Image (cartoon, rainbow, N blue to C red; front, side):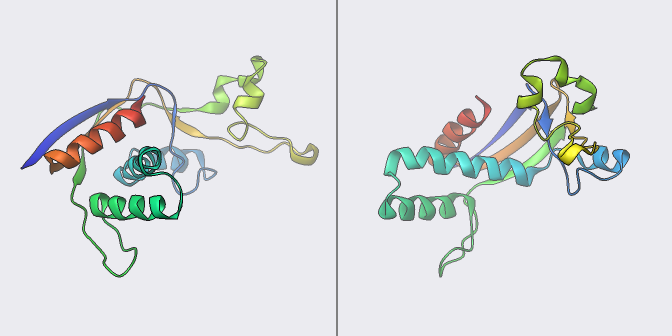
Length: 166
């Protein structure tokens, strides 16, 4: 039996979604930093493979089974049998999205900021200062995804999504 479940997510930490060209002009980079369904589904696939790796192992037979189940659930063109996904997801709502520029956070004031923020702030390669701005979505933003799947597939997705958000 197909079930349709609405899921709501709240951004808990800065969400870096660089868009096509994160180093473009500030307004364009900010506009490109949006919540999109494709990256969300890609993350779900990643966690599906990670969880199934624990179940089936990572030897050749295990990886073959994981790939087969992933293609059945999420769809794919791997092998001789391209298949449509058994589950459907759609982005149904995006609340107010507040953007910010990581370089404004002055991570260099923290003894760990320079290390943890590597690649997100101004860099000095070979002594030359470069602007390396990264736009992010501030914590507190909300978005909703509606998932349609059969009962057993939704149980699997529930574990995957729970792992992704925690």
